[in-house]
Image 1 (cartoon, rainbow, N blue to C red):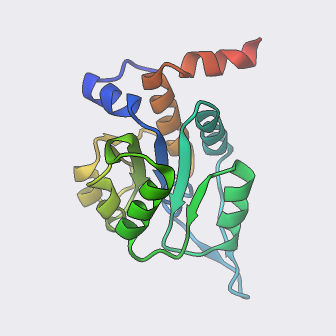
Image 2 (cartoon, rainbow, N blue to C red):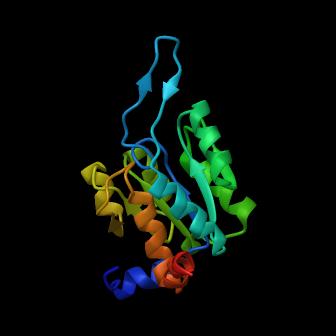
Length: 178
């Protein structure tokens, strides 16, 4: 990983809670709908393992999503994501409830999003992050935009960035070579 700019390192070092949107962040933004109405989503294993590594190093994880797709619930349980807000139209209210439940300050929260519905959280948290495909207005409010695309490692990139800033990335990766 390239050296982090000082301001980005400072913000990432303080993170105790990573909050993620789903569609357009953990997925590529496309929604496949079967004739019976069932939604199909594709998740990337790099993102999943990054989330697990982040959790193992003491960072809580959460999802706030506007949709209510059963496949997301399955993924949340598989990854052990501690906080799951689904079918949310007011992400600001969910964010406040989440912060109260998790006991973290705003500067200790990171949020990764892609569209204007994510801005009520992004403008309040300590580390607002966008994916490359995010709406330009959203990118304007992001402190960092990932190089990896949505649904293909963007969340893993953010997890690695946080672990790097907190001094956990190198030891976490080296465990796999022992």
